[in-house]
Amino acid sequence: MKNLQLKRFTIPLVLLLVIALPFAIPFKSSGEEELTASDHTQRKTVIQPLDQNTNFKRFVFDSGYHFEYPDAVRGIYVTGHSAGGSRFDSLIKLVNTTDLNAMVIDIKDDFGNLTFTPEKGSPFAELGQNYIKDPVKMMQTLEENNIYPIARIVVFKDSVLANSNPELSFTENDGTVWKNGRGESFVNPFLKEVWDHNVAIAKIAAEMGFQEIQFDYVRFPEGFERRDKELGYSEGEYADDDIDNVQKRVQAVTDFVAYAKKELEAYDVDVAVDIFGYSATIPEAPGIGQNFSKISENVDVISSMIYPSHWSNNYFGIPLPDREPYRLTDEYAKVENEVLGKLANPPVSRPWIQDFEAPWIYNGTGIPVTQYGKAEVEAQIKALQDNGIHEFLIWNAGNSYTQNVDYTP
Image (tube, rainbow, N blue to C red):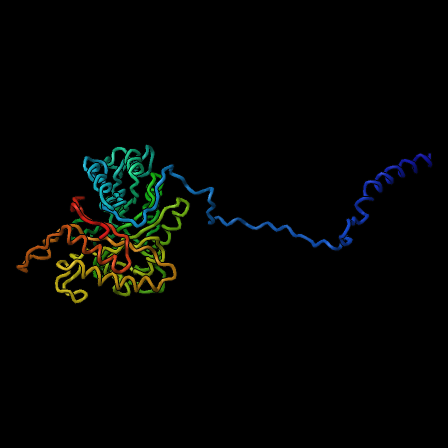
């Protein structure tokens, strides 16, 4: 019995030695040094937490459309009515027969409405207007004609949201929503709910196929510094910040831009902001909260509105800027280049230029209204080019653009 137990123990032991022996004997091939277990370094396996904010390429949204970024964007403004109406064909023809190559199309308009009907069940269904009756067909037309699509989203000027949610706006002493002299209301840039409202619409535009989101009215109402003590509104997360009201406004506007850009990263779109031209000529516009440099640091494209008619008399030493489109544009471009040149990663400069008349600035002067045509539009473009700025957008509120303009003079 004892011998049997020893046998049972010995056989497995021998087998174990036979199996393990080849691994215990160092292997040595011709011309190599003998390796032992001590020559191998230890390895540690460490599980790192996944950064939830990291965007991986496989998660980037693909709309299915293919648009190439032009050699330089040269675009026109298009309202929702024009994009969805009979004028769209003539605007397509204008682009196709000139050196224009882009359209800035209203997706959220100056009142706060969407210019198309969103999908059934969308939280924005009540905002939908059927101006663009077939957004898919519109995008296909743009793709077929190789026209670069930019979605314009008006942010803080939003009468619809203000009137439906007064707590997101600015109110008078009697609780009514404040309106400016044109009967327009703004929503509050301090509030994250307002940010998310607009960013969600921007994401819809990206899903539609737009290659760039252009945010307009990224500011407080004009002259707000004269009303901020009178109106009722929340400062949200900025209420406890130990800075003055001017810097709170600047911080809120800048933070919105940075937030929107981060939220849109997974959609692979460029982010642009329209900004008052004079903001580049001063440290910051205190009432409206626009700091040119800080906004520029957080966007891919900066579009200053530099219409000659929108500058006060004698700005840059020009008696009546509307009458001297080249000189005004040239003076502005020099200032902007200096400001952007100080940034580590400056955005693309793509100013808005003028293709319309401004008779209101001539009232009482006895000076004939300057008619804007081929010469005046080309003068602005030439001034930008002379300063190394080759991208531009042309504004005409009615989308009636001057014919026979050389857009690359």
